[in-house]
Image (cartoon, rainbow, N blue to C red; front, top):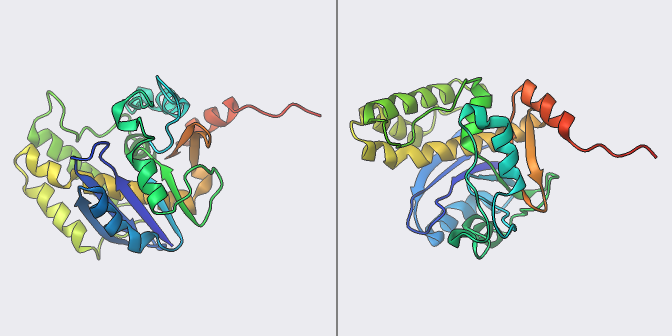
Length: 254
């Protein structure tokens, strides 16, 4: 079984990061592509058989306007860590036809609307809250290019993330040439544009790990949302798990 990470650009012109790990947690490859055809060509060998594909992009978008319930839930539980969600709806041009992630998943024949695990499935994930939960951080790692963050700061935050990933017991990056390429690129970068060339691949590795983690430790993740309106599968801390579970509706006694 393969665990695939897709850091998907919402629009057609952006760079998409791609990564894949095997059942043991060994990172096999990480790369970048741009067009739908290029993405599909890379994904098909890893998704022909049993797979769990974790996409960092809105996967099920059916609301006419506003937030999806899953976005509101992630923001509710992770907002204090600065890991809230962006809004997606059919009113936005990127999602007027359902969205790129949904279209690519259907093209690959992946199930997208099931809370139960199936043999070939795509799920929506979000690296920021996952990173907070997995590594017990007080806030997100600030490696994204934002106003007020210079290249040196973004580089130091990205190096922290690489160090965290190398320390994960269920992820083996030691035999992956792409990891060496990415680590070298971040270490030598002096400009934000140099970091941007590998940032999407790093996010894709996080996505692939979320898939692997969810498969092997299902009690440590929660699908925030539902199959009908969309859900975001994320690792959770014990405290968040307790609060989230307590807030779930419980069936009335017969």
